[in-house]
Length: 545
Image 1 (cartoon, one colour):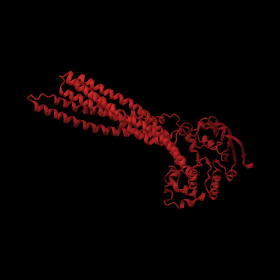
Image 2 (cartoon, one colour):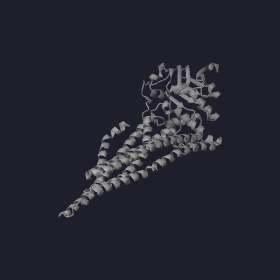
Image 3 (tube, helix red, strand yellow):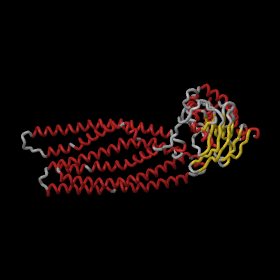
Image 4 (tube, one colour):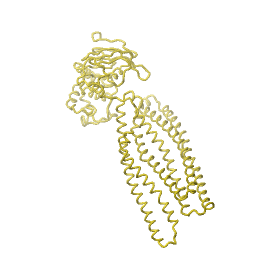
């Protein structure tokens, strides 16, 4: 964040100078009126004097408008550039998170940081922070003008302004604390609603609507209680401020009419005007400080993301042009937070073989492939490819040589071509169509209106069809290692046979690792590694299957 601000430091300094000029010119017109009130109308050159003050008064207003226009344009352009850079920095930061860091946040949190929280920063810099600073400078200039007019009256006016400022500060601080609590409640609501929305089918099937409604209502009522307190504290200080201001004005008038009657009428007018005028910017500061707390909280949440230290450097390490060979796990252990997932796992996968990893749900099958792809760090042991520790191999090299399909296919709302190629221009339509033909899934693509240019609408495509598209993507990105996590779990038997034949064909030249439960997949493997409670239960070779 500091680097971004430093980049535009010159522009910020220029904006500060323009801000000073505008606020000084805004505070100056009442002083000109004071001078007019104190004019000695018995002088011979009275007309020239009045015309001079009229010209000066008009010039001040015109100058203020010109400076204000230049200032607003400069602020808008600078802040838009700053926020563009912050959003880019934040997005780049998130995309470079390690998986362990990703798991600390849910999707709704990250989405909120990238959208509404960054938008709040715009309000922070361009709206509230700028307005608060402008109002503070305006008050400072008004107090200076009071002292220029009359020191004694200015002291009374300044004390009045200070008392009002203290009250505004105290109540605003409490409002900020309550606002922070409201934001926490809202984050909890968003998280809960996101989870309920993503599991909407489960809600309908098990008739959980009433239970979920009650759960959300409890969260809403909890927020409402805090908001009631917030509203009370927001309006409570208004009558106190009005009373202090009234006492201050009375004290100024009493002093001028009873204690020091030599004070000019123009000076009395000036101090009274500024004392009364101070209420408006102070109230604006109060309102802006309330909103400012929301923006500051957004800034803090963004700063938490930017301060994350666990970043993935995919370039770090050796890049091997053609990484192909035996995969060996040597006493590999892996923990996720406090839970041990893998315990002293050891096995060898020979190059050019097809190996199945089997076992019950939650025994660590997918975790083995995750640590192989360096999505997570291992606690102990070594993982070797070509007798080289993968910790010494760059993550880019490793993933360039691995093609992966998960049990839950990752499909974007984009064209089928873009979902398959992922921007790789070396993959041609002919390669895709050939693979479609070999898999025997022409019926899926023949019904598409625009062929590979058809945009996928997730709600209109079956889960099995999405998995076929994901499978084509994994195969067409030719690699030395293929990892398939339950690749045939959601497709029909005929298509499964086609896919099995293609996997067999791939395994003639590449190493294939499959996570599977189906007997047909297991039986066709060269080796089966059975897991139990995060450990190797047994290893069965093809001759024994």
